[in-house]
Amino acid sequence: MPSDQPTWVLSRRQAIGDRVRAAREHSNLSQFRLGEILGVDHKTIHRIEYGVSDPSPGLLLQITRAADVPLANLVR
Image 1 (cartoon, rainbow, N blue to C red):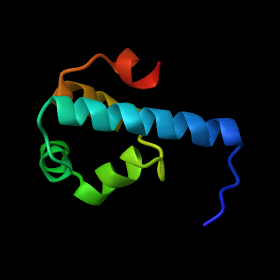
Image 2 (image 1 turned 90 degrees about the vertical axis):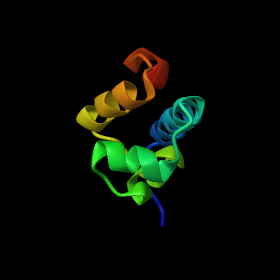
Image 3 (image 1 turned 90 degrees about the horizontal axis):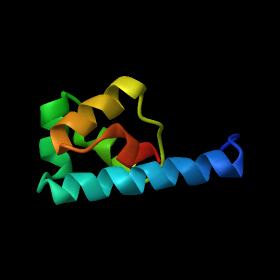
Image 4 (image 1 turned 120 degrees about the horizontal axis):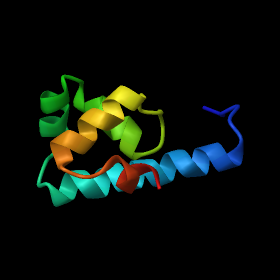
């Protein structure tokens, strides 16, 4: 599915997804378990980690709490 987003947006989305995955793994959480904690489907976590979808600011904040990482670590 082609995207109408600029390349730099797609690149940043992927970088954030990579950081979310690293934080989740560092916290020993599976995508399924993180989804349970956040009240979202594990597929949502998968789409964020692979840069397919943008997480909302609220969801990013929830991820930081669940993975015990500062928000700045995910969006730097």
